[in-house]
View 1: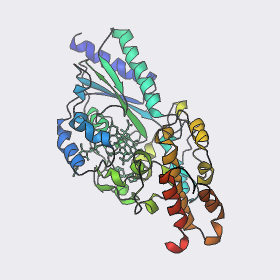
View 2: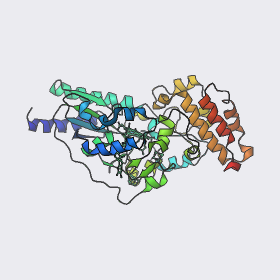
View 3: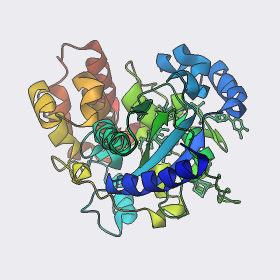
View 4: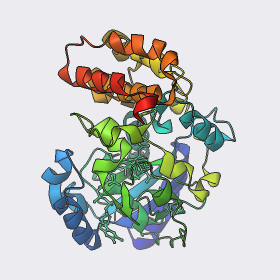
Length: 364
Ligand code: B12
Ligand code: SF4
Ligand code: SF4
C-alpha cells in the first residue's frame, strides 16, 4: 500500500472506531524511550508496592514493539465510561455520597460490566473490520492487559495530555474514560500530541485523601486508595485506614475535583450502566452478602477480581470509619454486622473487623 492509501486508511479506521463505540481514535508510533528513566526511578522507589507484575515486566512496559513482532504503530482508543443514565450533576452527587459515612462509595468505573471485556471485544471488532477491508494484517488488542504504558502512548497519540494526577485528560472529555489499543504492523501516519492544560492548578494533589500524588505527575501507588482497595491483597496499613473513609473499591477524588471533568462525557455503552444498585448501596447491605451472593451478583463486574476476602476487608475498614463518625449509642447496626464476621475463617478479615470495632467517636 502506498503512503496516500495509508492516510486514507487511517481516516477510515477513525470512523470505524467511532462505529465500534470509541469516542476518539488516534495513532502513534511505539517509541517510549523518553519514559524509561521515569519508569526506572518509579520502580526503584518501590512506588508499585505489591504489584509484582509492574516490577517483573520492568522496561518491557516502555517497549511496546516487543509485544507484537514487526509492529510499528498503536491505534489508541478512548471509551467514555460515565453510565449512560448519568445525571448531569454527577460530581455533586458523588461528593454528597462520600460525605454520607454509612454509604459505600464504589468507583464509578466499576459499577457496570468489567471494562476489560467491553474494550477488548470492541477493539477486536475494530481490528476485524480493518481486516475485512484490507485483508489479513499483524495486530493484537490490549486494554490494561499488557505490560505497556498506555497513558504515555495515549499522550503521544494526542488523545489528551497527562494530568498532574498522572491520568489522561481530554479537553473534550475530562478523564472519565478507559484507554485501549491495537498494536499493529500497519505503517499508518501518526497524530500529533496535545499540549498540557493543567496550568497552575493543583486541585488533585491537594484533595487526595492519602496524599498519594507526592509531586505533580508522580504517584506513590502504595498510598493510593485505588491500590489499597483493589491491588493490595494483604493488610491495609493501619495509618492509612482512617483516610480511606467509605471508599470501598477504588477512588475518584482526584478526578471529581478536576475542573476539566465538567466536560466529562456520558458513555454510550449499555454495559457501563450501574448494576445491583452499586451507586446507592449502604456498607451494611454489602457486608451482609455471602460469598455466593458476591460471586453471583458481581458476575461480569471488575469488582469480582479482588475476591470476597478483600471485599470484606475493605467494607470492614469503611464500617470502622463510619463507626468513628457516630455517637456511641448509634453504632448498634454496624456493630452487629461487624460482630457477625468476627469468627470469619480468614485471619485478614478478622483483623480488619477487630480494628473496625475499636474505632469510636471517642478515639478520634
Ligand atoms: C498500575 C496502574 C494503576 C496503579 C498505579 C497508578 C499510576 N498512576 O501509576 C493504581 C492501582 C494506583 C491505579 C489507580 C487508578 N487507575 Co490505573 N492503571 C495502572 C496501569 C495498569 C499501569 C500504569 C503504570 O504504568 N504506572 C507506572 C508508572 C511508572 O506510570 P506513570 O505514572 O506513567 O509514571 C511516570 C511518572 O511517574 C513519571 N515520573 C517519574 N518520576 C517523575 C518525577 C517527575 C518530577 C515527573 C515530572 C515525572 C516523573 O515518569 C513515569 C514514566 O513516564 C494502567 C494501564 C496500563 N497498562 O498502562 C492503568 C490506568 C492508568 N488506570 C486507569 C484508571 C482508570 C485508574 C483509576 C482512576 C481507577 C480508580 N477510579 O480507582 C485510579 C487512578 C489513580 C491515579 N491517580 O493514577 C486508566 C486511566 C485512564 C485515563 N483516563 O488515564 C488506565 C490507563 C487503565 C485503562 N486501560 O484505562 N492504576
Ligand atoms: S485515586 Fe484517590 S487516593 Fe488515588 S491519587 Fe486519586 S485521589 Fe488520591
Ligand atoms: S485537577 Fe488540576 S492539576 Fe489535577 S489534573 Fe485536573 S487540571 Fe490538572
